Image: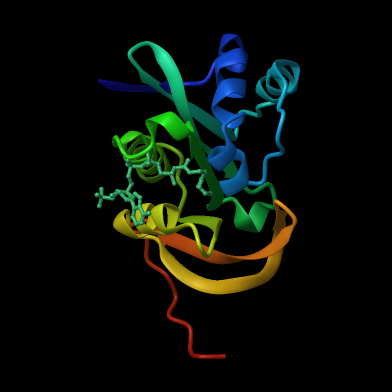
Length: 172
Ligand SMILES: CC(C)(COP(=O)(O)OP(=O)(O)OC[C@H]1O[C@@H](n2cnc3c(N)ncnc32)[C@H](O)[C@@H]1OP(=O)(O)O)[C@@H](O)C(=O)NCCC(=O)NCCS
């Protein structure tokens, strides 16, 4: 059974194991060989406007999902989304459970109107997961990041609060 809760400092070693798995660091902007100390430092530096959740499976941390709210006062309605699930636990609904709870927080507690993210274009599971939860592709970044020796493209995706009114824009 999957249980979602906020990450704590004591989770650093387990989160390090999640991001030590090849697909997890390759699919995000993390590097190989993460250390527990690095994750302890990140967890210590989490700001009140950041949200970092962990997914527990049988008492073990198997994934994380986060929201980072923009600091610019005119972009405070925006947060970026990031997530990763340990390679050996993908395809079991962990990513869906994390994203569902991030959206619940964004829509009902954090006063966020726009969620945005980048995901590598060839990450079929990631793109499918985000589209399943209402994210749409807004554009493409070419050679967005280096991944195992190759520059890869990324989709820019966004999803709006279901009840938030927006001013219609004419095509620019
Ligand atoms: C992307 C990721 C978070 C998905 O996590 P997960 O726990 O496997 O997600 P779920 O089990 O909830 O499945 C998500 C959906 O993707 C689908 N899926 C899995 N592999 C797929 C593939 N190769 N192509 C298309 N869809 C795929 C699943 O069927 C599921 O869809 P459904 O609910 O409609 O059946 C996970 O694979 C991951 O951490 N990858 C590495 C890091 C990463 O890519 N992070 C996100 C980029 S910002």
